[in-house]
Image 1: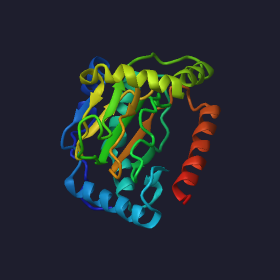
Image 2: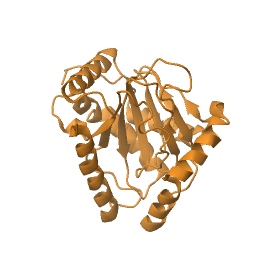
Image 3: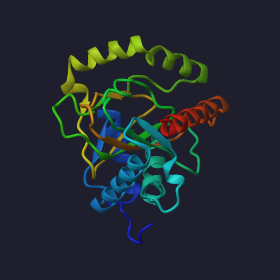
Length: 255
């Protein structure tokens, strides 16, 4: 980890109320030039090494920040990042619990099938999501992995089972096709352009979201940070999350 922080933000206490209000109003917030270019380059070098060792394919690494000294360790554990996520999350959902560790995922789309993982719309399990672009394809519009959002589409659910049932209704092939059609009919409303060096936030639990396809042999890499459990550390949700890690480890290491 470098001695100088890669994060260029005011104190969380100073900006959290304004960020939370903007998320309630607009559903999406961009913090421009919040990440130093040097951090982006180190994160890119990490991704390139991983692809060289494991091949170009679609995969996710669960909790990459657990690797001490990695660029992801540096960013995810930065006090300004943790403070901002918890600050806006507590404003939005006072009943939520906040673990000491921010859940984090490195998501990579590479190789000949740029459609892998695209338009798989979903709600996150946590109050707030932060998206950190690392590689974004520079291809034709609407074919470069752009983020699609349906902001603040649902409230916090009082029941874990209600939440899981609702997710099952929207997280399936039939619903994905319908949601993609709705998004493409009004891309100016739903499409978010992402640029490395910026940080992006949205209410993950309340916002239905996914990404457009990438052209073949493109490279799209994002670091996702999730914080705040609206259901108070429910054991069932923790089990679902643990199962995802097993699946993603298999996907990452298979030939």
